[in-house]
Length: 254
Ligand code: G
Ligand code: G
Ligand code: MN
Ligand code: NA
Image (cartoon, rainbow, N blue to C red):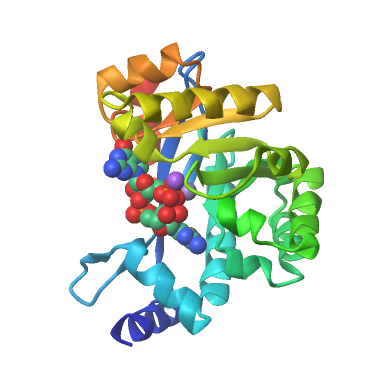
C-alpha cells in the first residue's frame, strides 16, 4: 500500500527515472544498445528496488500507466540524444507480461515512436521467457507486429523459464539474454557451463544474437568471449547509470 501510494505520487510528480546500462558488443567492443531500468525513489530519495515495486505495480494495475511512462521516457531520451555521440544507441525497455494483455500495446508503441519522429529500430523490448510463452496468439501477434516494424525483441532471463526449443523457433525474437545466474555459477559448476553453451549454440542456430548478463569479473569476460557470446552486460563494464552519465562513459570507452 505504501509502495502503491509512492508509485502513484511518483507518476503524478513525474519523478520516476530511467537508468541505462550499456551492452558491449564482444566482437569489437562497440556499444550500440543499452537497457533502460526503471528507478523509483522514496520520500528520503532512497531508491526502491524494482524487484519490490514492479510486482506491486503489476498487482495493482498501475503497471500499465508505469509502462506507458517508460515508453514515453525512452522516446524522449532518444530524442535528447539526437545529434550527439549517443544518437546511434538503441534503448531496450523491459515489458511486463501484463502490458501485452493490452491489445493496442504494439500500435501504441509504434505510434509513440512515430510521434517523436523516431525509427522503430531505435527501440527494443525485453520480455521474460514465461511472459512470451504464456501469451496467447493475440499477444504473440503483437510482438510480431513490433518485430516486423523493426523493433528489437529480446527474451530476458533466458534459461530460467519453460520454453521448449521448438517453440522458440516460432517466436518473433531477435536476441536471447542468458540469465545472470548461469554465468555466476558457470565457473564452478559444470552443468551451468553446459547450459550456457547450449543456449548460445541454439540461439546461433536460430539466427539469434546471444547476450550474456551479469559479467562482473575479468575471468567471466574471458569466458563469455571464449564461448562466443555476441553481447555482454554487467557491472564489469558499467552499472546502470542516469542518462547524464552516459556521454562520459561512452567517451571513456571509445
Ligand atoms: O536493476 P534492476 O534492479 O533494475 O532491475 C530489477 C528487475 O526489474 C529486472 O528484472 C528488470 O527486468 C525489472 N525492471 C526494471 N525496469 C523495468 C521496467 O521499466 N518495467 C518492467 N516491467 N520491469 C522493469
Ligand atoms: O531481469 P533483468 O535482466 O531485466 O534485470 C537486470 C538486472 O540486473 C538489473 O537489476 C541490473 O541492475 C542487474 N545487473 C546488471 N548487471 C549486473 C551484474 O553484473 N551483476 C548483478 N548482480 N546484477 C546486474
Ligand atoms: Mn531486462
Ligand atoms: Na535478465
